[in-house]
Length: 409
View (cartoon, rainbow, N blue to C red):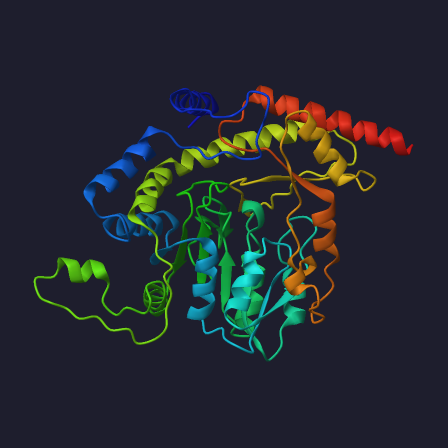
């Protein structure tokens, strides 16, 4: 689809949906929904079947087809997806899981839910993703899994990570919360993140993500036994799903053979997700156009470091993360932009700086993770962002950086 046609399609949809925003405020993100999603949800409401049912089954089938995964299992959110993925590969009390501190705290929390210990390893400065060399150095006899994060949609270096993991026979789980629609070149072919190269990939459908169901998550795998475990775990360990019981002409008594969880997605969410999935190629294409435009507008600002996309990666640009010059105060820049009607977010958090993990002395050096949190900001990026708004954002950011540079000269 060419850029002109893409912009036309997006603009037409924008006209059909309520903006609901102050004309003077540019948000950091905004979901791209319209009457099609509303109608899909309405049909489910009127059908009388609201919980996990036929829409979830269809959503799973379509998601697996899109990503090239053998199996897809829908759940209530990505945190629950991460929890189930870890359990499914055998992580339990006393185990260690190597992961990134530079991620939303759910990544670390999901490891703690299993009674295991997160071993934080530093990131690469360019991509903000787990450094495979540091992962190799952190492996011990207690390492049960490697949990890598595709940060803000930028694919992590799976080739190198898998080489490390496979040499130690350690399963890899992908925290792909932000990465739906991102692609990675594996063995000379482009494929979506979610076609499992490791054991499991986990996705989020939170409203800040590229496609949304309000809340919701998905796990993909090529392992039928892992998929079986996930489906049992998400529904209290119930050996016969309620959909099977309700459609049976015979009375069926289910059993519960172990303690599971209520981690199910509703059919209302799945119906919305199916419509969102249809839009995914268009949404990602538009976001890539916006990211390219940011590069044009910001590329000549001295000291500002723009996101790096490796030649083997195609990001969905879930967020646009820029690194500020070292002498610039992050919070001051964000406040100045907010004063001018531009919402931003600070760099991705570091879990080891939060209370539940602050006293964990078993972590490795996390210098790059801390620098990324302290010196980066996320700029607004969403399908409906106009070129005029981008120009305005770039202008205000440029002026503030210049002002802070003059103040320290």
